[in-house]
Image (cartoon, rainbow, N blue to C red; front, side):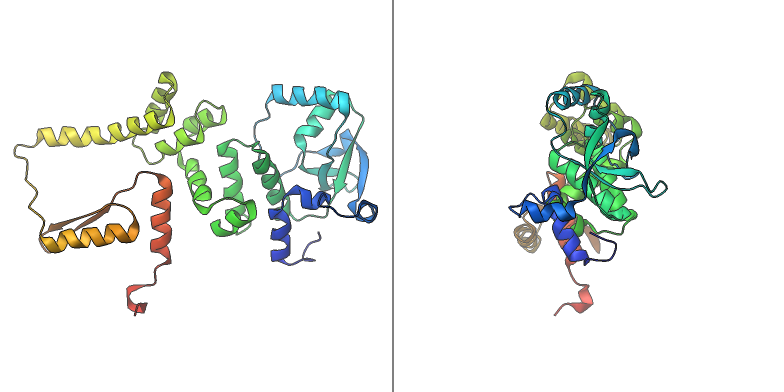
Length: 309
């Protein structure tokens, strides 16, 4: 793969197939494959961590266990690298930094590498593809990788979904985790909170306090959702108690009820309509962030009112 040598579509097809496509592990002729693989043994000190490595935390115990395997069997899958931009005789790791770290612990002098001519965007994409496919990234690392692909390399969420073999709602919901406070993101990085726990806290009024309570009580995701909902309902209940006279909701006429029913059938979610004089409010009720993302996506795809027949 060279800069500009292949079309964007061709590049994304290869990336979508993952590292197997790069290493030629798809029933191809190995004799001819060796002519283009650029596989070689390289001194460990000639490799450097990649600038676009999405992983921020390396589990010491996991790397140590991998080092024991490397001692016994060597490195079975070559490390994917590209030429270092500032040191032509050395290399930058694109995928396989854990193997490189384990090789150093195992006191190997050389490691097998596959050299590819990759752009910065391709390097980040491949690093994310490998780690996501192996489920090696924390949810926050995954979200940060997605953010970089969106902001630095102008991908869209739909393109990322196709590239990584994920749903668009998964991309969108993972990105929302970046809006959490740093202390909560640290809990996710350390494995104290799962991605499911963290998603329930997005948009809550006191995510740090709620996160601490979830961890201290060992709540599962469903219990965490109830905790967050109770926290949201608390202020509303207090406001209701403080009012001198509770206003009764006027009975809805048959037209309003029919309109609510039609909208509920159209969106697949409960819809409530309230009239206030000449105006009013329309409420769409959802239970999960996936449902919210689906509604927003569908509304975003609708043409402006003036363009409709």
